[in-house]
Each structure stands twice: as C-alpha cells, then as structure tokens.
Image (cartoon, rainbow, N blue to C red; front, side, top):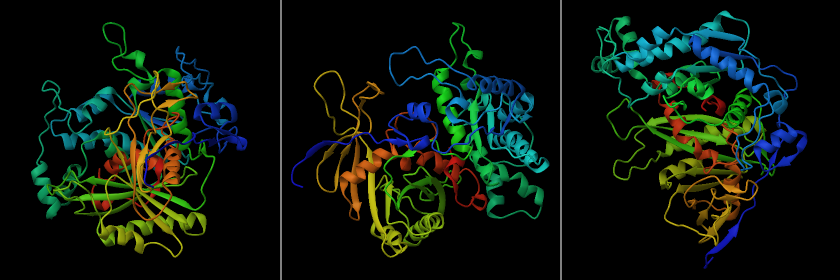
Length: 507
C-alpha cells in the first residue's frame, strides 16, 4: 500500500432476543429483550450497607421495577426506562432478599483511623465479613450483592485521600507499616504479630481491596454503589442542587440494570457477525504498590470472545517494567505460561483450540515475549500482535458543523493506520463529546492479518462493555478495563491471588 486510504466501517450490529439485530443496546433490549433470557425469574439480590444506605437501595429497587421517564433532551441517546422486568423478563425484588446492616459509628471509626492501612482493612471487614457470614450460615444463594457505601467511604477510601485532622481517630497499636514490612520478610514467632501485619499487605483503596478479598472466595459477585448515585436528591447543597453531578434516573437505571443482569450470569447481547474461533487477549500490567522496586509488576490477561464472554487470568509477578522506557515486557517463560492459560481455557469451553489469537497491547512486543507467546500456540493457530494507542497527533475534520463519523478509518499502510471509534453517530444524531474526536492508532506489530478486519473487530469490541448500556465505547473492551483489572489483581498479597474468574467479578 503506497498511498493513504480514507474509508468507513459500518456500525457493528448486535444480536438480542429471538435472534433479532440492532445497533443500539438500549433500543435492542427495549424491542427484543436480552440475548439470554431468564423468563419470570426473580433475581436474588443481597445488600450490605448502613441503615440509611439499605433504605436508599430499597427505594431504588422499587423505582427500577417501574417506568422511568427519559431525560428532557432531544437527543435519541436518552430513552425512557420501561422497567427491569419489561426489559429483561426476569424481575428485581422490591427489596433485597438479604439485608446486612453495617453500623455507621463503626464504619466512621474505621474510615477515619489515623493508620490508613488498619482503618481501610477494618472498613472492608465490616462489609466483607457480613457477606461471608451470610454465605456460611444461610442455605439461600445470592446472585449479586449490592455494597452500598456512604459518600465519606468513597471520599476517604482512596490512596491519595487525606483525612481532616478534626476527623482523625487515633488508636494505640503495637505495629506500624515499617514493622509490618519486616514481619512480611521475616515472619514472627508469634501468630498475633503476623496477623496484625496483614492489613499492610492490601492496597489503600476500599473498592479494590473489597473486590480482591471477596475474589479470594471465588463466587461472590459484587456491585459497589455510592449512596449519592442512587439517591442524589438526598444530598443537596445550600442552593438545592445535588452535591455531585450524576446521571439522570433513566440513564442510571439502564446502566445499573444491564450490569446487574450481566453479573446475574446472562449476556444482554452479543455481536451479530461472530468470527468463529477468534480469541482476543488484552494484556494487563500493574506495578506493585507494596514494593520500592519500580520494575516489579503483575501481569494478567483479559480474554474476550466476540460472543461477549470474558475471563481474567493472572500471570506471574516479575521485573516486567523498564524504568528507562517505562514499558512492560514479559520474559519468555511468563509470556508462554500466560498464553497457555488462555488457550487452554478456550479449548475447554469450545472443545478445540482457537483458530486466531489477537493480542491487544499498549506497547510493542519484544522478541523474547513474542517467542513465549508463540510457544503456547497449538498447531494451526495464528497469532497477531496489535498495538492500540489513544492519541491526538492527527485530527480529521469534515465540512460543516458535524465532526468525523464514528467508524472512519485512515489506512496509511498495510500494517498501520487510524480508527475513529469516537465521532458523530448518525443513528443518535449526535456526537457524545465536546472536542474534536481523537482516533485510535492501530498497528499490526507481529503476525499477519488484514488491517481492515482488525479494525472492524476493534469496532465490535467497543460494543461489548456490559458495565453500562451506552451505544459504544471509545476503547475496545480488551483495553477498556485494563487499569481496573490490574488494580484488583494487585490489591492483595501475592499468595491470596486467585485462579481465573469470569470478567463479571472485576467490574
């Protein structure tokens, strides 16, 4: 290819109930229902939170059982929500099957503990132990747990948050972070010392630590929600407006309901045109927060199929990050072992190995790690390495007031070009952005494939985000959640990290 070619890829269509197709997730669900139905089935919902949080969740559950009017906006992206049962066939209960109450006084004491590690661990304990106690004591199963957190947990439950001096709770302890690090390297002869050091092995992030500790149990599915999200009008400023901007009630209902249904174990939709035998891997790297060695990182892989199925695999911890280039690269053995896990999982579910494997990454693949990936391949399976980067080095303008169309491509060679996954959407008659949309830079770094086919696949993967009910994302799902998954993989101690689990556990 000697000249640049400007082209356009049509919007990928999705398959819903009764084998019907549509390009819009909301309209497809409204017209045809979900791909995988659960007719007349009542979802078993559990909830854990403060007394006020549980009351607010019950009110929200009652709300989404009925019709919620669309936002007063001319854009077709806003749709009325017809009610959970009307959309999915299955029903949400008007109140949770199990309501586990966390004491607000206890929670505040933990969150505002001057020792952030001890306080965060105790705060997570209040929620996690209630869920695990219920699992052990009750024969009833819960499909999904809603963890409802007050705003102060969100505000101060993050690594860089600082507790106001007036709120700090001083607790005398015989251990601190420095001593805990020594115990981690050289365990104490006294079990109580080793136990006291455990909180320092977890990340200072309430959301990630909760997910990581529940992932150790394997089958606990959690949706964390803020009280201000489901009841914004309960938290007002002096001028009568909510303290934070939130989605309108109908949009929130669409997004949280799709996530809930997906975490229930049912796919809301899949791509219409599935390329059989194709496996997409998104590489995940995350530096370890608990070490001073800037090279150490955890690697992982998100495997996705065009059907929408996703699984997260955890690879080895090692010196994968180069301080000089700030890039992550695996050793040959680590790359082989990670790819083997993915291919074996594919083969278990399909009865045969994949025909094509596409690895999506943010950086190039060096010779050593690429050789490792290739060693994991069965005979007859092709491997392609694709680098996908967001950038603003190239702008494309259309005559008139509308920006470039989503789906526009600029092929600069047979191995690389630009793909606009953001842009004007004719179906919605709008561009869901403010500034001139940026393109994704797509490069075929290793292996052989048709660039247009690769870009068409990427377009499809932007419509498999079951964490919301948006028309499409700007990033393919292989990379969309890479940071989030990496943070959860590294939120707890090395020995507690778990076996491969479905993607629903991580979002």
